[in-house]
Picture (cartoon, rainbow, N blue to C red):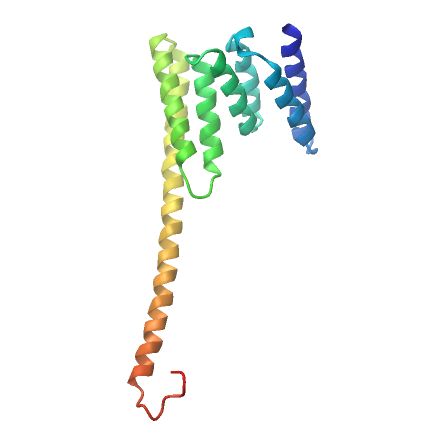
Length: 185
C-alpha cells in the first residue's frame, strides 16, 4: 500500500518539474492520473492527499488539484482540507470559464462546507484562512458575473446599433419620392 502512495508522490514531482520547466507535461499528467487512480480510497486517510493538493494549487495546477481533492473526499467527505482544496480548485477553474459562474459557485459552496467543518472542530487558524479564501472567491464570483453581464450588454448594444442603422436606411428610402428610388430600395 505504501508503495502506491510513493509512486503517486514521484509522479507528482515529475509532473511539477515538467510544468515548471515549460516541458510538455501531458505524459507526466497521464502517469500521475494513473497512479492516482490506482490508489484505493479505503486504504488511506484523506490527510495523505492534503499536501499533494496544496502543492498542486501552489503551482497553479488546479484541474489536477481538483482530482486529488476528489480522491481525498472519497476517503473522508468531512475532511476540512479536501473540501477547502476542492473549493479553491473549482473557483480557480471557474475564473477561466467563458460564460458561466457555475464552478465558482460550486467552489464557494465547498469553501463554506470547509468553514462549517472547521468551526465544528474548532480549528480557529484554519477558519480564518478559509474565511479569507471565501471573501476572495466571492469577489471573483462578483467580478466574473460583472464580466459576463458587460459582455452581454455590449452584444445587445451592437445588435441595437445594427437595427437602428437598418431603420435609418429604411426611413431614408421611404422619404424619397417613388421616382427617385432605385430598383431594390
